[in-house]
Amino acid sequence: MPYLVLARKWRPQTFEEVLGQRHITQTLQNAISQKRVAHAFLFAGARGVGKTSTARILAKALNCETGPHTNPCNHCNICEEITHGTSMDVIEIDGASNRGIDEIRELRENVRYTPAKSRYKIYIIDEVHMLTREAFNALLKTLEEPPPHIIFIFATTEPHKIPATILSRCQRYDFKRIPLREVIESLKRIVEKEKIQINPKGLLSIAQEAEGSMRDAQSLLDQVISYAGENIRDEDIAEVLGLIDWKVLNDTIEAIASQDIERCMEVVEEVYHFGYDLQYFCRGLLQYLRNLILIKVSQRPEGLMELSEEELEIYKKQAEKFKFDQLNHLFSLLLKGEQEIAQSTFPRTMLEMTLIRMATLQPILPIDEMIKKLEALGDKELSKGWREKKTSSTLGKVISSTDSGKNKVEEGPLSKNNEEIGKTKIYKKKEDLKNFQKEGALDESSPKILEEKWRGLVDFTRAKNPILGSFLALGSLVCITDEKIEIGFDENSFHHERMLERENRSQLESVCHEFLKRKTKVVISSLKQEIGSKGRVVLGRGEGARNEQERRSEKGEEGNPLIQEALSLFNGKIVQG
Image (cartoon, rainbow, N blue to C red; front, side, top):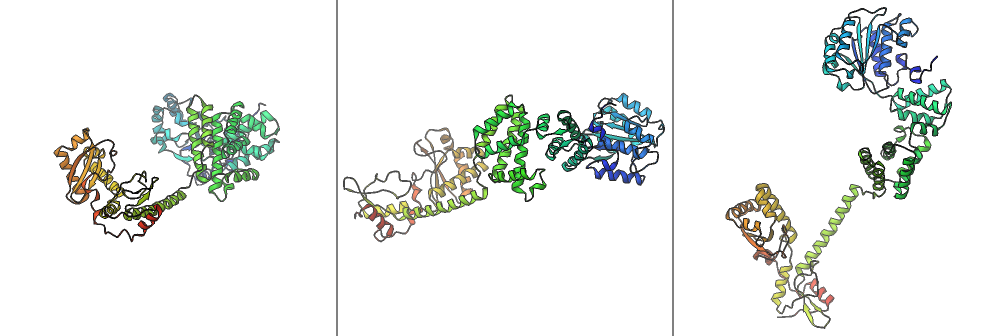
């Protein structure tokens, strides 16, 4: 007797033996018991999940000699004929090889004939989505109003390719992928009856490789048995199926955690030497990172992963070396690298570069911590700016001792903008000192605030008049008062000449009036290149550079504690006029 592969030998023969499709088998059994069986069914789902097997069981349940029953007896002649595929009344058609209109026309002719010895004539068309559009159209009328003794059962892995006119004439049942635990339990029953020695970890590897397909799992088990015999080791499974050794994945993550680039390159060499598919290696590494992420986010990760207790402990210890954001970023880098490897003519090089990027990834600061640091830094800068503002608004001319022993007085405010303290001018009159105090004062017309107003004016102008706004962006704010705003442009530049035109200046005055909420005269001036950068605020060139500062209240310099502190610091004195 020829050998029968495990997938055929252990094929389900009753509705109870169909794994993971309780929502379908229960519905079909109820339909049989209530005599509400439809004339056309569509079974859709992934490969190896029980579509064709369920179709055969349904055919046996309807045609059983003692039936119809919710479960076939599997002992009568009709049940045995359907099981062995020799029944004249249950016709299985491969949609991929019988896809033309001629085959469907022949089917239409045959449906007129009654069953030979069964209750129903049942047509099971596998991969029905492969039929041509003409074939589907030829089937429409027969499918809508078939003879009472005809039942159609369509099976497909791609239901979206079936015309809507066909779908609307069928009862659709969507088959799910079989849960991993059920696949493992089924494999365990098979190896016990076949007297095969294999550990649970080996069954887990086979079930994971099958990806929810029972037929694939049985075929893989058959292949491993052919290689290793009755005693199967984990190494045999990995070698036959080309599985990536779990230890290799673990070593790779350890190398990334320790930023050991040399070890990462050694892993690539091992993977390449053993002939593993590099894309497959990336997928295994992605699965590994996925497990680490689940451990980070889940309180009970063991329910989401099929791992031994030993492996789970290793995962947990390894997950402590990473932050969640870092794992998420590593996953994104590897996913992008896997896509690049699939498209590259140098897959090994792409894998090496991907692992290097992952190994050199710096720890990511969580966004909430980053916001807190920025807020703290902003408060610090704000406090610093207030102190500088207070210092520069009160500190006047300070006489400092020079190397030659002569006293000189500094010009301008003592602030961080002074490039060299030693470059000073001498003020001989008391009024000069008071004027200097006024010049150093900072208020709402300070450069920072003026810069914000200038940017706001440029953006507002762009929104109103894009061309005018583009010219304005190339200019610099010279000064601004209640009566006028002076804008400078590079000398002899194109945009300077354009802005001198009356029409453009008139439009700009209208925009400024709308933005500043007051009537303002616009003055266009020329700047030399070294004076200021384009689009910046250039203070002190116009008449209004000190507009509101002159209204500051004056205090006696002798009684000002900051001036006294400066005099003490520089060992100086105030020169009276």
